[in-house]
Picture 1: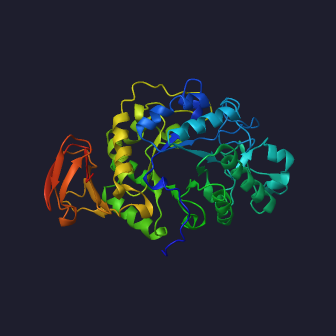
Picture 2: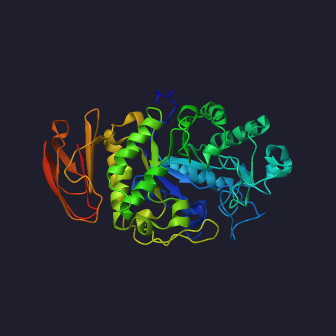
Picture 3: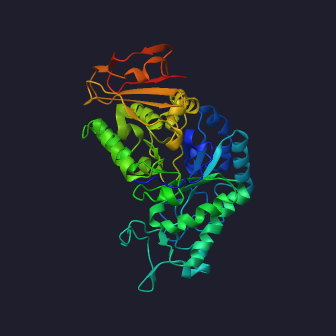
Length: 436
């Protein structure tokens, strides 16, 4: 794959951890104030950017559940009154910025609600089949029937493109947000994204994350990162015994070939879709959850935490009704804080061009143990994961390039790494060594 032209990127992005905030469920009150109140704790957790699920008014026509999907947007310029006022949102953004936290808004460009302001004022912005409005269409042009609460937009209309660009500029200009997570980015033509990026960056440098994995040219048009859906599937398969750890090597080889140089993805064990539709982290990953979170933080992209994971979230949060997080004692806060801090201080673990290449460390138990190192400008990290339910004694060969003294990230001591070393790991146990 040829090297891509470099898309502008904020300086904070490569070392960042994203925190997805489901505003409706994040606090008992389910509003901006409930998020603002916890910003000091989130800063202490160590995350860098709060990705807020859609904050816009939700359509009432064909609504799902009692409150409707946040992804059924009625007005791109409005704020869901359940969340508060524009001033409340400004307070949230300003409070986050004072703590050096960034705000990423969820953006839904492919469709609106059936009773959207645009649909009433500009019906020409919408796709029509045999003269009729339609639910969104998939990559093959087929109606997505279970998306019954939303109506497809037509990017063949230049006026729609201009209107969408202006709406995206509005939130940066008026509220000083720091970027967008773009819902179903691949259902919008890529040449639109090439038009949008310079328009947004003309206001301030932004971070752009595509909810998509099948368009490598996204990295040439607009986006800094995309979704690691394949990583998510393979890690769940390893836990379930359907694949071995070597599948991660195959995946990395595929990604490096498919995407332009400098690409990176966002990795996660939970997000709003996974949690609501498929299961909690415990349901999907069981005893392997921490091991795969370690991998997400250290492999070759940027990690994401879904609200509540730092508290051992054991409930499914509805997308259409009120089911607030039942916060307890933040039992996993220290675990995630260590990982966030590690990414901040060890440049080897940064994403894309800024970080070190994943280098496999050979071992004699590769059907169970996955081991690799990364190095960048003198910073080094070694990650060893027992991705099996068997206690395993493993001989590793880091070689001379990774030999030396390291801090044990999840221990209290330093460790001398030698050219060849032997470790015994419990089922799903992990060890992370950092040179700083």
